[in-house]
Image 1 (spheres, one colour):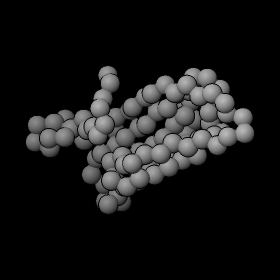
Image 2 (cartoon, helix red, strand yellow):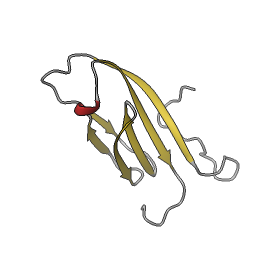
Image 3 (cartoon, helix red, strand yellow):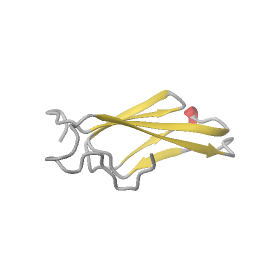
Image 4 (cartoon, one colour):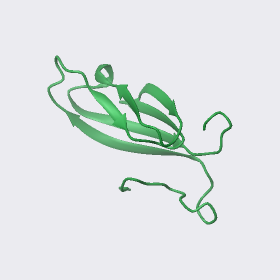
Length: 96
């Protein structure tokens, strides 16, 4: 299902679903990889985000409302690529 940004799946803490992990997927067509470096930049994902490219784990970011970036050059292939985010917004004592 397409979403607009900014987005939340449980914006109303009184009537929305329980806090949980949601997966976001997007296909990305990449051309001209040779001799370039590619990055994924996020302006903020609340509160914990695991990033995958073509089913390979790239990294984890903790902390909502803060930007983060990963170099994904080594994970990309020429042509279609799958970008996947696992986003958890449950309450955690280790995340501000």
